[in-house]
Length: 253
Image 1: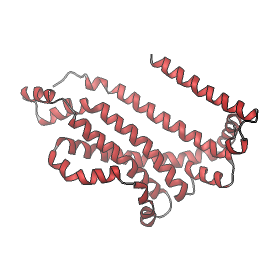
Image 2: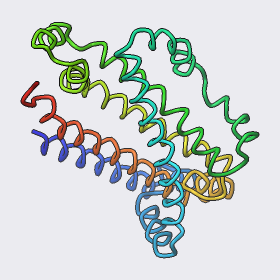
Image 3: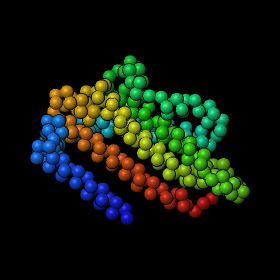
């Protein structure tokens, strides 16, 4: 079933590329505005050979790794703490919903003032966008654990640490991974937004630079790489969730 889903997705994506190429070649689409897949692939190869693509990719991946990694560590820690302890939850609740509902991109000018144009501002935007969904989903996952499971564990004299580690956290894995998926996409978005305006390298910078020069094909190269990164990251989290199934179905206390 999983292989069939993957094959169907690849085939549908290939059909879109073929239709796009055909529409441009038949004159239905203006290549100046849309380019076409064959030209984009050729530009991708050229940028890879020149090293430009790998340089921009290295910069963006580095910023993404720091921003998303920090959001995961902070979000999981505070999420578990708030989900497990009601006092902590009440204390953090105003900040949680402010971060989750506020238009966080409005903080961009403040970050520029604090950190200047460059890597630190990009990382800060990436962290701020990714942190709320990771934390909120972790809290929701901990709080949604079946009370009967917790009661059963405690009835067998399980220590609080064992109840958390062997019951609550394994049962929360689907919600936590869902939060990581949301956070991953938002972290990548934060990197690109930051690089569009506050960087001199990276995939977002490449999009802005080529867009200003009306180099549509080169701009689509960076867009395609970003899309591939997003899909690869999401699929990696799906594999992580599948790998953690052994923890959820472990030997117990």
